[in-house]
Amino acid sequence: MYWNQKYECLPREELKQLQLERLKITVERAFYNVPHYRSVMQAAGIEPDDIKSLDDIRKLPFTTKEDLRNNYPYGMFAVPLSEIVRIHSSSGTTGKPTVVGYTRNDINVWAELMARALVSGGATRKDVIHNAYGYGLFTGGLGVHYGAERLGASVIPISGGNTKRQVMIMRDYGSTILTCTPSYALYIAEVMEEMGVDPKKDIKLRYGIFGAEPWSENMRQEIENKLDITAIDIYGLSEVIGPGVAVECLYKNGLHIAEDHFIVEVIDPETGEPLPEGEKGELVFTSLTKEGLPIIRYRTRDIASITTEPCPCGRTHARMSRVSGRTDDMLIIRGVNVFPSQIENVLLEIGYTEPHYLLVVDRENNLDVLTVWVEVSSKLFADEVRKLEQLGRKIQEEIESALGISVRVKLVEPKTIERSEGKAKRVIDNRKF
Ligand code: DLL
Image (cartoon, rainbow, N blue to C red):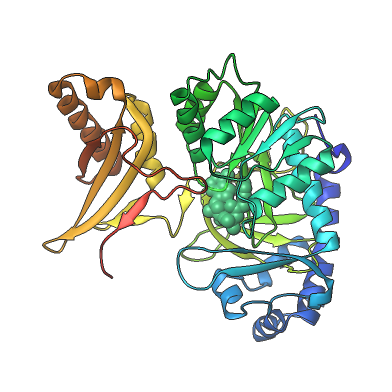
């Protein structure tokens, strides 16, 4: 049930003490070894000795993706390259990728966190872990891989792609746990159906540990039904360490953040001010043990809330809500903030549609126009046109009432929208800014 009970269930007072000790070391490491941190801390009038309590973290300046880009590729590393044993990077949608480096000890910590995460999501040494996260510069593949080996499970390093082969291997090798993005899990389910493979009879999968992109509660249900598994949410980002920063336990009531290795804050993305527990805002992380790339108050742009209410699983670490979107995923349509997850929720509640959608934004006569492409289940497409029209109207009305703006709905045949083997692309914005 736990991988490391001592640390996962540490009483919160002891946890805070540990965090403070580690925070002091991290701030020193950053100040003395990373010119960027030294200069921004000096500009803010802060020295490592000023960190006397956990609240003092607020005196430290934030770090942004921009800071990592400005110090591309290795400028934020706190150790010489000879100490770095692994390099990953995250591409993002614009500009240079951000580059992250790990010392041998960082890789150790990461494997520990991933072993914890896999156990929290139901894995044991007896499991066959079908790891369909991409291997390479992306942290998903190797992150899960090292955790699975640390746990002692049997890992299949299949990576993403060639989905029919994935299904064949899953069936023949007796995979019991699937790890990939939630959108790829749905695609695998679709291909399974096409191949006439029955998840209940032909496949041994029990759990899936999915993350790397936002997904909704409805999407979880869809995946659980289609693959006949329990689906668990895992969160992480390259700049902080990769997957394993937070993960759900089997109570599925929030993702436990590995607080012995990271401090989490939730801030108002506009003002930077801290928000009280339970309120949604931008997640900010500080690493406590990382050597290669210590990260101080990193602004993730991910939106969630946190709680320290006790969890029945016994883990004492704070839980974050599922990520409801990113501050930079947010579309502004005629002045109204729109998150793709709001539309996904409506679609999955209505039913008759496939969980594949695309949001296309155009500008016509200086007005933003949002068109929601929705795949309709093949059963309905074979039916009469009248029913389709009714469904289209219903989807339109429900989305309009959820968002408070008018939208167009385009119903398309199954498999029209491009499938992803990694992170799904849900938005095409044709507006020129
Ligand atoms: O996506 C690490 C990862 C790999 C997490 C495998 C989970 C599983 P990046 O490529 O740097 O790292 O992207 C990080 O992905 O800031 C979030 O916006 C998003 N993200 C990651 N996990 C979740 C999740 C990996 N469970 C960015 N729910 C983050 C929602 C997620 N969004």
